[in-house]
Amino acid sequence: MSVYATNKRARFDYEILDSFEAGIELSGFETKAVRLGKINLAGSQAIVRNNQVWLVNAEIAPYQPKNLPPEFSAGRTKRLLLRREEIKALLGKTQEKGLTIIPLSVYSKAGRIKIELGLARRKKKADQREAIKKREAKREMESTLKR
Image (cartoon, rainbow, N blue to C red; front, side, top):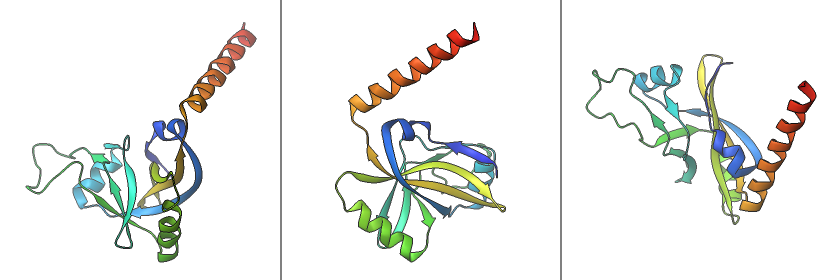
């Protein structure tokens, strides 16, 4: 399993409550670009519309910039492939106040490109500051132990 991209801000900005694995519907040149790691998940999210899950604001850079099809759009909305039961569960949970679906990582599994989605609740600023303090304290302790 090789990881093509991760959403580093997601784990800092959000509290991940549950995670799901989904397939992603891509065209051929998008698949090649993703396999080269030309995907950016920062600021993207998944939404449920018409009993389908869609990935919004994820950018896939062109595979060959000078050889693009005319309909190419780097930030087009992509359909995610989930089972009906999972879609219904996500729809029910996103109706709750403050829960969103955030992409966490894109990877390959058995030759297919998969995306890990997290059901998340936004952290408050105080929680983020606390995480920063803990991380800095841990770094400081490790540096003093190395000396």
